[in-house]
Length: 155
Image (cartoon, rainbow, N blue to C red; front, side, top):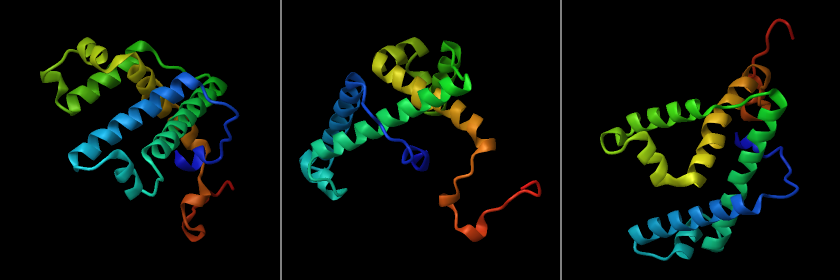
């Protein structure tokens, strides 16, 4: 996904989405920083960022770019997801991680909120469908040394 994303140039971001991801990144960074007994800027510096804000900005742009890329590719290929597909995917996630014992599907979605649900729908469910649709037609040559790249007899 990162190799594909690196080939995309974004002209403008949806500011609401960008801010939602930025806020999430700052909250998550603050949580981990607190766990390690440090401030967010210090923790971000361990990953090579000047500040927590720089980390959050890069993360928010990365995920917004992925969302826009998946939405564009899905529209171009006529791919969509239904609410039922999203619910099935969330239910599987809940089953796999033990949330089913504590929450119903509706409770889990309510707790995580509409922003999370939109992100999950696009980044996980739609994104997986897009990548599955592209897989037979796409080879990321940069991801393998040239000697290891196989070609079919038809090529």
